[in-house]
Length: 304
Image (cartoon, rainbow, N blue to C red; front, side):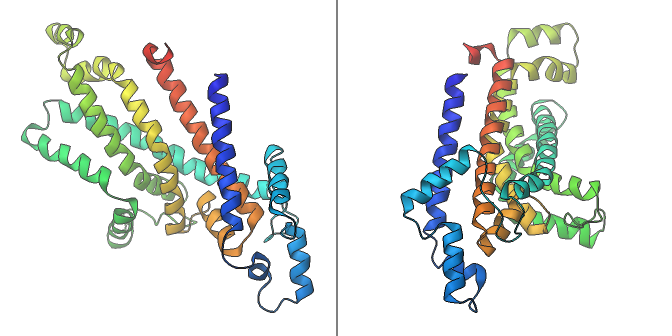
């Protein structure tokens, strides 16, 4: 446990250091980009001093690390008087809702697809379903999200636009559904393979011999034995899911961490940008730790 915490802290430190270096090697003068071409030399010098860019790089890095340890990245440059951490916390709510609902939908759809793929219900269509899992898992979100949105929200008007502020929960549900599609395909693909591996196990043979239906055999007895690979798949896909949430927020102009990161980058709001990227990294590390804990709780072999 202590070692895992130290590993997570080291990953966050490396990530934060890379963010620090990357933001200070961007082309152009951040002060000039923030104040514009009409700013005087005195105004530019004052802003550089406020940002600390007039100090040696190692001094800037030490100041950055102090802010990282105290979770204080300073005031937002775009909204003076508002702390960068407060803006990030404000943006984490919509992103958390989107990602959590997408994980729930992707897990349910993926597990259902895996059971359908190994059961007797699909017949000869099973082969096409299996290939569909691979095709969907390999397709980028940007390749199908705009197309599905056009068909379902614009052409057929079955659902509201994911970025419509008046859409409420239906808009969130639609956006999460789009985000859940790749995750469900990965879960279905791995879950199907795991279920096939245990299909000849004696305990499933006993269940069938006692007259257990296919649904009861797979859902109540097969799935618990394959929960480890499925949970691991969900955990490894969380990083891609968070990245997809950032893309989806920007694509449909939904509020959230992704929109905040891109807005902060465009306006060179460095305190907010640094806090946002570190928060995204921390969120990823936290979700990986939760997935590992769930996997260990399910499978005693992982604990040993």
